[in-house]
Image 1 (cartoon, rainbow, N blue to C red):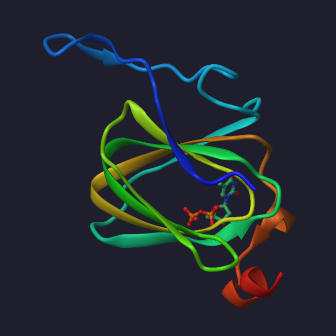
Image 2 (tube, rainbow, N blue to C red; image 1 turned 135 degrees about the vertical axis):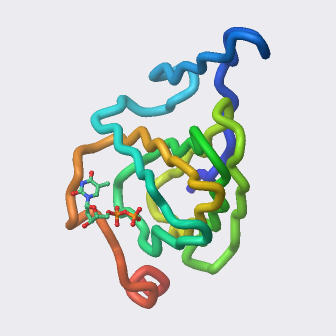
Length: 131
Ligand code: TYD
């Protein structure tokens, strides 16, 4: 199984004018993107996630603020990332439990491989661990 890993997006622009980053299928994103969603108005230190996906692949970017993400595999090996740079994303393969902590009014952008399907979620940690 592949592991969660960071990817770097091109950063086009200047300190003065600001930057554009671009997520291209194949170049940075290893799956065709079928859905994009974002979370916002997250209170400081709020925790989200607490689930895994059976099939869904994602790229997650903190486009504003800072998001700490802990992924766990079924053997409880941890993969911890601090996202606080909009030119960096994390590629999330299927099958990893995730716990996210939002700070500094962080805005999360997610590029997802499939449309929303609640049946793709595992929301019970014991089911995840033993599945
Ligand atoms: P969830 O994926 O659990 O978000 P988080 O891990 O950030 O808390 O989704 C939260 C709620 O939003 C849940 O009721 C499902 C709903 N939802 C959709 O209806 N469509 C979507 O594409 C997503 C991502 C969530």
